Amino acid sequence: MTAVIEARGLAKSFGAKRALDGVSFSVQPGRIVGLIGPNGAGKTTALKAILGLTPFSGELSVLGLDPRTQRDRLMREVCFMADVAVLPRWLRVRNALDYCQGVHPRFDRSIAAAFLEKTDIQMDSRVRELSKGMVTQLHLALIMAIDARLLVLDEPTIGLDLLYRRKFYDTLLNDYFDKERTILLTTHQVEEVENLFTDIIFINHGQVALAASVEELGERYKQLTTTTETAPRARALQPFYEREVFGRVAMLFEGRSAAELGTYGELRTPSIADLFVAKMAGSAST
Amino acid sequence: MNTVFADAAGGPGAAAPPQAKPLGTTLVTLVRREFWEYRVLWLGPLVAAALVALAAISAHVNFDFTHEHNSKLEMLLSPAGRLGVSTFAQWVLSIPLYLIMLFVLSYYLLDCLSAERRDRSILFWKSLPVSDGLTVASKLLTAFVVVPIGVFLLAMVTYFVFALIIAVRVAIGTAPDLLVFDAVSWLQLEIIMLGELILGVLWYAPAAAAMLLLSSWVRRPVLWATLPTIFAPVLERIAFGTHHVWNFLHYRTVGIWAILLHDLNINPERMQSQTLSSALMQQLHFGAAFADAGLWSGVVVAAALVYATIRIRRYRDET
Image (tube, rainbow over the protein chains, first blue to last red):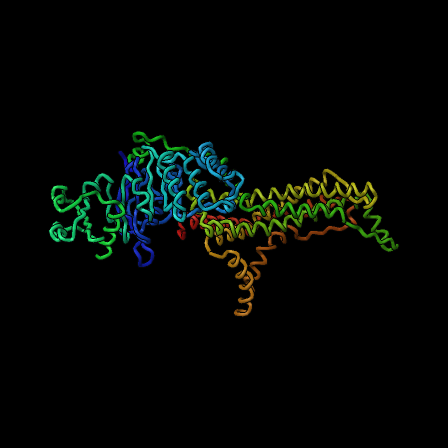
């Protein structure tokens, strides 16, 4: 199947700082991909490149289109929500729906209206009268009503309380996502959404540190929890990260089988958050 | 290239690429959006129109019945004189509306592409399938066509309301019966004013486009539009003792009107034989004004500035 996003050697500098330094990855249809990295790692720059919002060098194809030259066509099939609520404060809820209906060939007003019915948002309210959580809900309502093939979310729930965050991702997963659609999401709060992802891309210092599906992660990475006494023997198998908590040592291994590690302690698949911390600590020291 | 695209668009499970909304629907939506954001676009002229119309309630003509003015008074009250007064009123009452429009549109053009960068809503607008060209086109359509035509029609209505209030006052005896309605005269002046409006839009197009460019480009467009305009002529005068900048600004402000009104000679004495509107029709140099090279070179400059504006909005990344 044709990749939804195919990126090869993306590069972009802001002065001396290399925001993207030869980034390559591909995103397959029907996946939920987490683009994860610390602040300033290049996540947002990568998303902007994909959305044709910033110039860059390298090869990039999104839904078979070049975002640099075919942005207008691309946006008919791509939906995008930026990190904070960017809906203008003067906009009325009703007019937001009018507007999307007037310009978007794939906007279904009834879906947005039905979604808003379930919230406290009034059609006559202006965005400035809504709470931050409600603005995000409104934006989500607009996005859900657009039949897009690719949805790009850049820190969509930043600054929201837990209830709104949970509701946001539940709605996204239950009411929006299907096998025809692809979601690319950046976030800081890895722990909270890690069950959402089918694929992850770690990005740091403008480079891809790791790109794999969640199934591949389970095969490639193992977390061993062992005692301080057994630790030196396990260390011989070259964990790429370890930390000690309450006299227990947690080690992360790449490419070791369960048979090799099993004798030293408990084994499990590391969480994405653990892997992220390990990978970022590793790349920070190099 | 072709095969790659065909594959992506028509691959298994993929729906046909959606057609864009009809251009008309999109443009109407975009222009409506401008009026949602800038209510002053319609509120400003409307308030001005209401004030002008209401002025009819307190409008006051002082008659001086001393004998040296009697001949003038007689002339004023003659059928030809009343028609002249009516035509004059029709013209003069539209001026406050156009002045307000000038201020409102200047503010609008300087702010419209700057506001979306300030509040970062540009990221929302850009998340929808509306090209930068179409966005800028909608702002031009608003400022160059929709608002001017709206104000033109509003001025027409304002005059009728004004005349109606005066008629009521005449009926109850609190105003002299000075206004008459003559369809030909009225239509002639409306055509003249429409011609002037079109001429004005074309003449001020480069200034308007420059404001739009500043709006998309700098952080404080109002400052950038006003300070250099005020200080450049002064500095040139002090530094070089010349006034090219001043001459240029003066030319781009009134140049076209100098051509249009060249040798205009309206003599009230002749009003008995020719109406004011016919005299204007005859004497205004619309042909020369519309054929003026300065007018059209300005339009070309405006087009270049608009193109630059679209490029800046398309490729600028500061959010």
